[in-house]
Image 1 (cartoon, rainbow, N blue to C red):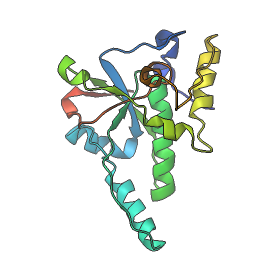
Image 2 (image 1 turned 60 degrees about the vertical axis):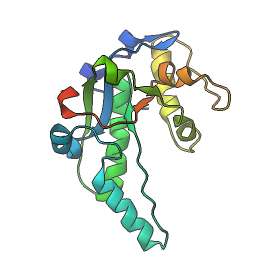
Image 3 (image 1 turned 180 degrees about the vertical axis):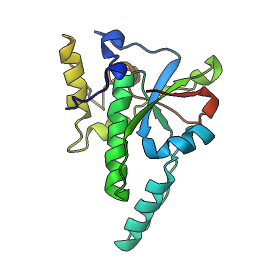
Image 4 (image 1 turned 45 degrees about the vertical axis):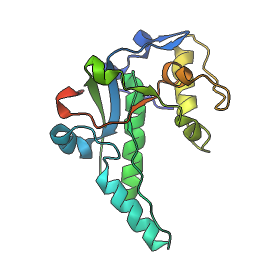
Length: 186
């Protein structure tokens, strides 16, 4: 469980209700400090972490497996606090592959209505929730519990699509996001 979340990013108390996280036109994306220069220039790109892709491709070639590149959407959440969790996961993953010293960073995304309507609940996250060792549900449960709310339980086979958005704070957009819609949070 994460305990080092900067105060400026602790927004669950303002967003979380018994129905889940409120959503609006501002979204957040957690990433690594190593990617910020590129993000400021080019925006958020689907499958945009080129260094991680190259590292994975090299590892797969070393062990004799082929690597098929896929295009992932840009993952979003309506909470700065949840974005910080994902930023930390990104840093951990990148550090394991690159060995570089990096820091978690949260980017605010303010989309015009037409683009905002393209944001969807991330039901593909069901597979992530089933992965052994993934502590997201524990982390999320601790946020709910701190606020006196019952932690959500999600049955990937039966849950409503909107549960992924509101109860889990997981969304995506299957498009690149121009830098003009982004703000780096302190």
